[in-house]
Amino acid sequence: MPSPPSRWPNLAELLVERPGAAPVGLLGAPLAAGSVSAGSCDLAPALLRATMKRIGRYDVETGRELATRIGDRGDVDVAGMTIEQATAPLSVAVRESTEAHALTLLVGGNNAITRPAVLGLGGELEEIGLITLDAHFDMRDTAEGLSNGNPVRALLEDGLPGANIAQVGLASFANSLAMHRAAEEAGNLVVTMGDIRREGIDQAIAHALDHVAHCDALVIDCDIDVIDRSQFPAAPGARPGGMAVADFFAAVRKLASDPRVRVIDLTEWDPPLDPTDLSALTAARWVAECLAGYEMR
Picture 1 (cartoon, rainbow, N blue to C red):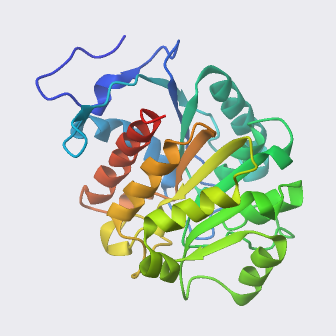
Picture 2: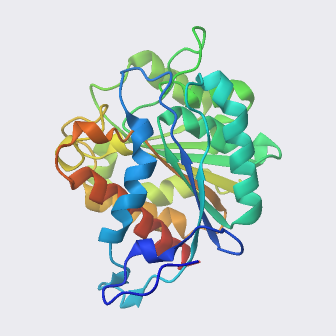
């Protein structure tokens, strides 16, 4: 049952423990294994839920109050699993959620959850598009196994065409020449932070959506390290010079408004790295932006 309304309506009131007919599903994917740098991003789903009560539902810019119910599907039990072991249960959980909800919010956990998010949609990979908001290409070699540094390469090897992949927010001095070349040779769209500064976030997202215009269903990967480190300290891979958090929110809202978007993930949030509540509040605001976009459909 939903929580009773309060004098200050907040996001937590929209959560329902019995998903039923809720248009949006919330699924935790607390995967920590296989991270390039050790961390505790498996703690993120629980903290996100706890922080949602601190985020209001009224958007002063639009004069609208969020009303879409969110079916909380709990967390996928991937404790102690490797990425290889966790891929199947995560994919099944995503499949079940996308069959029940028009939009699934998948809360990691590390960036390795993006691959099972795509695979979980089912169908032909040629019909699925992936847009990443990420400082990194995620094109590390898979020869030594899966990690949070190679979900895009792994998906390319699965058969996802580069023509279906748009990567937005790539940062200088956070990637390698070999990864950049591999992404472009595959046909991925590459939009750097410099492009965003020159042309604006609206143009960057429009370009990404144009690149995947032929796809029937979309997955959006929000690797939180795309945000400038000063505005999201709890992202181990974030660096100075990243995306302004206001641009991140605008990008998420625009992407969520596209009816082809079936899954939006949030990854690489490592709560213990931020002794303040800044990162938690930013992550919880991500939920509000996803809902605001969804209600624009």
